[in-house]
Length: 426
Ligand code: CMC
Image (cartoon, rainbow, N blue to C red; front, top):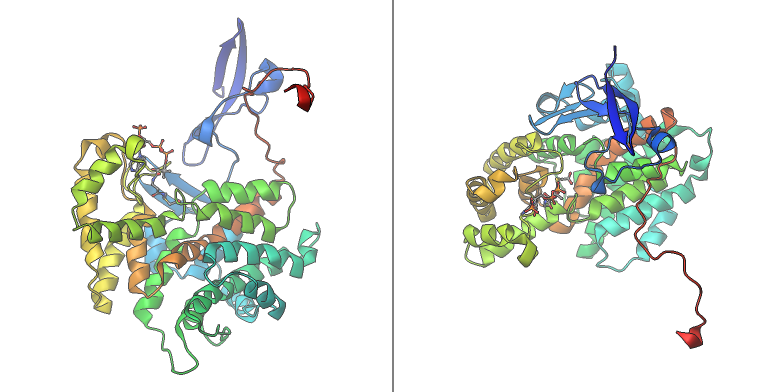
């Protein structure tokens, strides 16, 4: 007989079914809880709430395991291309050569962005944060492709457009911040070289893509490609659950990613490491400040994770990649040593050990981005380019599963019914 969970409340007993995922994670199915008992659950930050069933990404935070569609992150980072991983996440299987060529060709042919989007872009302040620009322009895409809001739309075409155009739009902010002309995509280049060319080529001189840089970026994008029901992905699913189109839903995900507790942490990490360097490089002072987070308000950015209570497997790969890339490129970045010192100090400190706070994906990624020449305020944009296939896959799954509209409950703690008092009597 299947397991059931028994709940006794107000002297009455209720049974709820339990369920088990393919990797043996267990849940109580409380879909009928309120109907049966009159109670709701309170779970701030959804720390214990499974909002959906999903077949895309599995992670075990205690064991430090991450898999996309059953493939380990270590295997994919070592052997796959970012677009192969994108296909895997979105369509469920690794593509055959024929499927991949069709997918890649489609993306190649849709990299150009409507010139009217530039008019919107030109309206932003010169120093606008690239994440605000990215979120706004992806939302604006819904107005250029209004059929995306229709039920019977060509979703595969919108998927290709998003994957193709996001890197193009992303490079505009960087070029404008330098006062340089933006570059058009070159469709004879592969996905990552095309992005690098738009970022770094100038009309006055040739730019040759360094394969070390392209490979490092390939790994970083794969590591960011999905992470199950995190804040931005849940946002994408929640917005999409109202049947909003895919562009608007993903634009909301980009906004959610921007925050420093989520993807924005990669920018904060580098700024923190720079501050430590400018302050003489004494990591212990910053470890102490983080231990007193409640009074100092300071957290070690790039440390801790809602789900990982062990090493983030992505951080392990990135730490090694940071060493390799900096060596291959001949870059000597003093903040790499500061980062390693900070990690060592934290991992030997009982505050971090007892709370299971380990370096996360954002801790070393910025050091690589910096070595590749990507400016700090573009780091979270890089995360967004990487996460895009995951958001798309999760949005598509949510629609295919016909998820009900997301609408949590609350425990109301405000005033009880009272009478309106006219303004002159208040
Ligand atoms: N530095 C110092 N103390 C910390 C940190 C940190 N980075 N992270 C958590 N703590 C402490 C926190 O003060 C609390 O202590 P206490 O039990 O004494 O109150 C305890 O650890 C648990 O913290 P929490 O905020 O309840 O943990 P959470 O699971 O809700 O938060 C987190 C996870 C990622 C928001 C948090 O660890 C954090 O703020 N880290 C820094 C920001 C960061 O690096 N974010 C990137 C996350 S990975 C990339 C992504 O997917 O977005």
